Length: 68
Image (cartoon, rainbow, N blue to C red; front, side):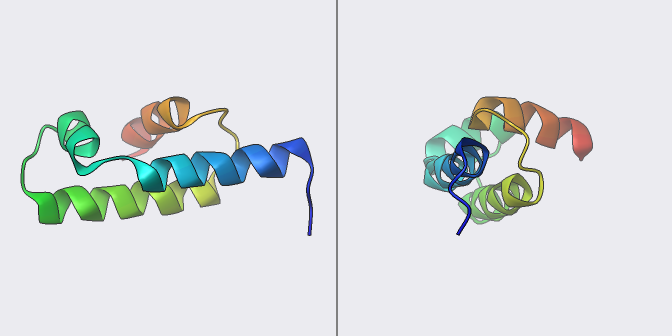
């Protein structure tokens, strides 16, 4: 298993994205339909795993929203 600081950061960003509350994601996407909120959160979390170049979930979110 690779335990370099970069891989640790990548996993942390994924975990942070996965741990975002429904309310936080709802606010970020301006939507109160929690079925949609959960889909967006899952897609964002997986996107963080596929794009492991960000220091934190906020930077990743900005890139994610620009990529969509």
